[in-house]
Image (cartoon, rainbow, N blue to C red):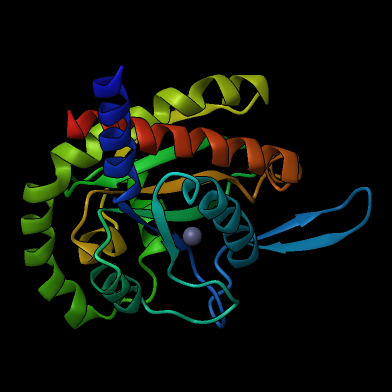
Length: 241
Ligand SMILES: [Zn+2]
């Protein structure tokens, strides 16, 4: 019994010692995707606000068993490099970037999880473009080398993290009738710059009114935060075994 208690303390200490940095996408001058809802009353929703609302909920859940931080807790402009620098400052083990998707096709819908990989996929390129917006040409060229190195070092861990989070989230998506678009590779500079195992989460499509009405609800966002948190903790436990 004594050993069992000791073991439990070691396990929970291990999880608690892990640092998760949550990155609410966009902010300040950069609103990200813009969604509109017509009923019950007309409303314009900005990705930057929704990403922050969800990230705060995610932090609350993860803080129960890890050390968790946010790259921004207010509506302010933060560059991709500043977000990545914060990962070094807090010595993050895991980096989670939170976004909401958008498409010119208003029928597109669903939840997606991305990990950093530099394979070229036309379907993913559109999302990448939206989330990589504030990088200039010269930075892009330099960063290609960084991307290759970071992919080599993190892809195995990020894939396993994505797998655990996906597993945990799946039943919830079914419950809320949200399409599961699965785990995908993508070239996201914020993930490369952070140089950590990480994910970019696209919670749902803001360009689809029906989906936006669903994914902006507190109840859904709270349930999703719980499930993502469980997935992250399962990943940490598995890596430490
Ligand atoms: Zn975004």
